[in-house]
Amino acid sequence: SQQAQPAAAKVLKVGAEATFPPFEFQDEQSKDYVGFDVDLMKAIGKQMGVEVQIVNTAFDGLIPALESGQIDVIASAMTITDERAQKVSFSQPYYKSGLSIIVKADNNDIKAFKDLEGKRIAVQIGTTGAEAARRITDAKVREFNSASEAFLELKAGGADAVVNDLPVNEYYLAKGGSKDAKLVGEVLSAEEYGVAVTKKNTELAEKINKALEDIKQNGEYAKIYEKWFGR
Ligand code: GLN
Image 1 (cartoon, rainbow, N blue to C red):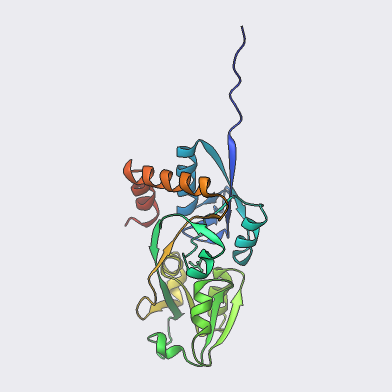
Image 2 (tube, protein in one colour):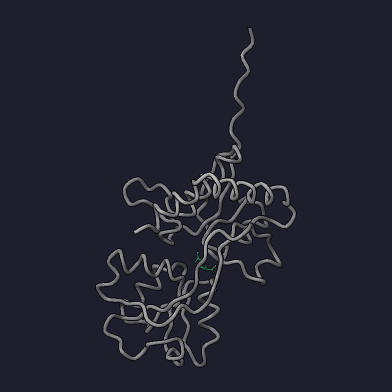
């Protein structure tokens, strides 16, 4: 008798700039991509019956990669902004974030956003942090390919501050960064992360939104949140 062969699972290519812990980064031992976004996309993929493959892509190359079809979705701690929403379509928000400032532990000069005028600020290219830094009067903004390079520049004394997403700054400090750096000031902005797909792919956008709702209802989202942000 004939046995039906199981169809090979479809693969959803997920673009992410994978040096942004705790959202997407490589496990030091296994070299696997791990993080909140990775677990979230795996859970969404499971709901949709597809396999998820992370494609490590420069942050400023994510939207172009989506537009050219190299990736199917972006899940990279990407803030939903009006400017980006003109090019891509975002899912419902999946994480509340905001920008914050990190300075050297012995810096007593920068205490708030207003103190950044005229200062040297390290940021990650193409991010909301880079945009915020560029709006500061006389600031000397240096853009790096990753947040970790911006942190290194601060440590090396080449920058007075880093402007970057609060949960990533907190993770950096918690994982040893607090030896020579600290958070200062209030959270600068209210931002929300969304999963992005092309404007044409409304069907995929709907499926992702549905899957997000499902994992919020069935407790999977809460589990993933607890794993990465529970204390
Ligand atoms: N949330 C910020 C943005 O969207 C930074 C994201 C990132 O560096 N991965 O611009």
